[in-house]
Image (cartoon, rainbow, N blue to C red):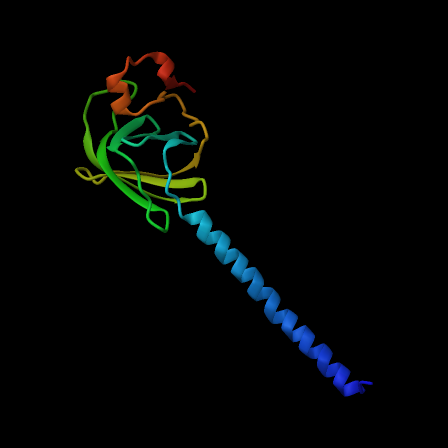
Length: 168
């Protein structure tokens, strides 16, 4: 038979153990889920957002931000933290009249889960577009400007038609 002080001590130890174990368990669960949601290895596909989009395959990257567009060599390979960088060219005068002026550009960003933050930096003019937020598998919602459905490398090797564009 327990005495009153012994029962109190037992209850206090159970409460203390619950207060320590429960938060540690939650922390471990969140740490594991955060680690699995940040490591992305497959970027190929369509990434869409408001007035922005990216189409990626194993050899090409095609980006639209507003009425501008650019291309880089794929694939994109994010690091363990989801960060990536690719180099290519960018055309800030693509629509409504494409003047054909291409600028050297850096495409940088981070992917967490199915969300990408993308920034395009032109190295010869110091102009920066973005950051924009894109979602994997989401159709880009472009304003008055069309977006190509396929990257430049594929467009150049196949017949390009108006059905290869997403219109507003």
